[in-house]
Length: 113
Length: 113
Image (cartoon, rainbow over all chains, first blue to last red):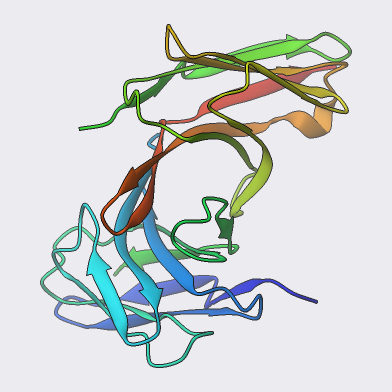
């Protein structure tokens, strides 16, 4: 089956800890995206990557970092600098960054202990 | 910056039609999307419309676009209990680094039997 997978489904973070959220796609898409969703709000763009080994900051990149070493993988690290990390994180991909349709993974819910 | 607005909540009886409305500010929007999100899940692409169209029909879904007023609507005919979800409108705008999606805050649709 082609699609986007995210893991884990739930993640708990302790104070001062960095955590990494996984996103994998087997759609052969060039572009990948990370969004944050807070209750009752729309999605806000954290980072995006148009191609392997390249990524750009989105609207709310502070306290987050990403890498894009492989086409199919775009992991997101929530660092200790992110003071309010509790949210639902959604990964998406599109054929390229100029082909608008983005397809989403099932999401990871991050909770702070 | 770009803004996309939606009403927060819609209640509808099973079998009736639902109409979800959305307004956007960016006149350079190229595509407009409707996504559906069920509880605890990612976003599912429902349909989209290109900005030079004024209507698109896909089975029970009808999208109407008034580009002059920057108003988009999604009509769901014969609404079913499985249509209960949050519906997000999103606009796509061209930029130097590809297209960027701007999401509305979502409309929660509750279908009553």
